[in-house]
Image (tube, rainbow over all chains, first blue to last red; front, side, top):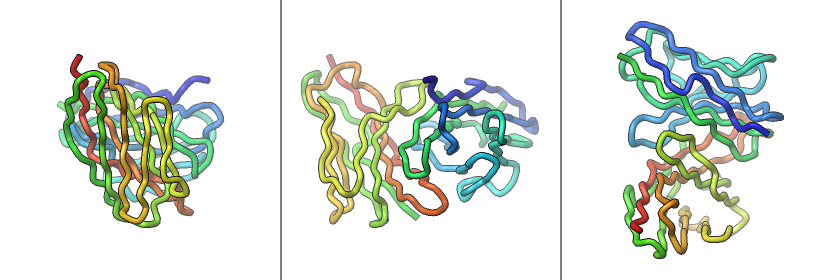
Length: 113
Length: 114
């Protein structure tokens, strides 16, 4: 059973460009969480999604950030018009049920030049 | 919201000694407490977890204790080995109708000296 997959592993963007991060949950998992980790800090919750639904986006910045988890395909975290402060590692986690533990992917390291 | 504090931020121990990392949380409704190990350039890996109806849980050299009254929980690693060197994160969560988001501590960088 493959673990949580994220791609790309590394992403470089110039200021003003768009960044698109993908997350494929573990097989059988329909709950996806996105977290952001700044250098030498803990992980901060961003958004929780189920298939075709955003359940909790209380950790998402109000502008430029959006997330989706379509019926088919991976979950996508989209950052429009990136700024240098968006540089961070973005992790997604999945779980089979809402109350279950979360299994993390390897992360996407975004660098904004 | 929940606030999780973690200490120490860095910890160095000699190989074979024990390591203890402590976390406190603020929301008494939190009922699930996982610990993750993160190696450089990798995602966090679950190493042990505990729920609020249990006071202690052990898995080989790793144990976690929970004191609900004091709202703190600790990770204990015995007989440490160089491969235990990593950053360890505690987290607290509570299942609600909007999910089960984790609140993480700021991490402890553990170095085991051979």
